Amino acid sequence: MDQLSITFGALADPTRRAILSRLAAGESSVTELAKPFNMTLPAISKHLRVLESANLISRSREAQWRPCRLNPTPLKDASVWIEEYRKFWEESLDRLEVYLEQLQPKENKHCRKYPTKRGQARTGTRHNTLTAQLAKI
Image (tube, rainbow, N blue to C red; front, side, top):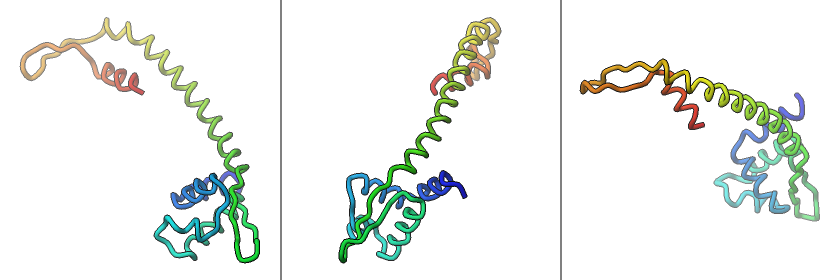
């Protein structure tokens, strides 16, 4: 499996993401990392092994203390990958916005009047509703 898939797999769990958030503030012991969670130390250790195998954290040994440290490199790689797709979607949405703006004057010419339940006339089409919903995005 490639490193990016391993990184996203490790990030899929909310407990592991919370552990990474705590480590972003600085190194911490397993006991300190376990405090906010309603889990046993072996359960936290299992999460740490997943993060360590994804190279998201490193652990060292200082006498009895085993501090964990954040390794931001895989997160940066994931961020670069996400950024490429963010640009793609922003450009796609920009093109959709231009297209919808071009349709706007045409819609006004082709709108139908149809009666409401109370007998009042209302102007609109299904496409107007879709355009209005997309404009909110």
